Length: 237
Image 1: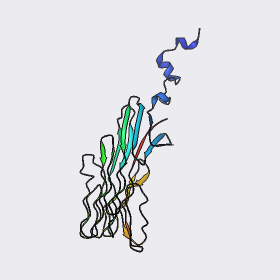
Image 2 (image 1 turned 60 degrees about the vertical axis):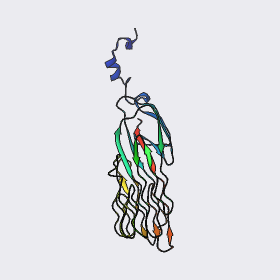
Image 3 (image 1 turned 30 degrees about the vertical axis):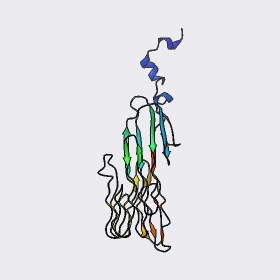
Image 4 (image 1 turned 180 degrees about the vertical axis):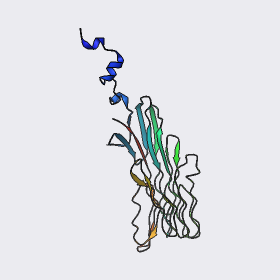
């Protein structure tokens, strides 16, 4: 008589027959650029698309960070960074979820919103070298006043900071004078996002997702904001 025919379900679990490590025990999804690190799978969207979930075992959740497009500089005033929405341990169901990744604002224009799973990250405000910077996820810098940060008080919550009088755009911290706001650093995703646009002699355009465009005083060049991003992660093993 085969040995397993006399073994109950509890004993089978002890032998690993129902281990959580099996493929059926984890979320299955497609969309964006897929990478892995440690026990996590990451889906990175740098443009609009669809996050498609084939299956979600009971108790499984996702983490994600949603960043809007940064605002563009306007002459000597830096743009504000896009707003940041970071959500952890979020329930998700099977199905297709539209992803909108906001583009950065052109020179003299505010950034565009990013949207996912009912949450909205607000585009960064444009700079204004002849007045008050535009309001946005983070506010743009302005010659007479910085723009207001709208992200923290939005329905989605999140991170954003005011621009400054003196032309620096807000980012992951408030701007001060010509100094832009620092990037927002996510410990969950181990990456930086959404830096304010500075006014200085070395700026060569934004390098992080969702950053405001700045102004280079040496070359008299104004820069557009950078596009936003969505990164979704979940355990896959």
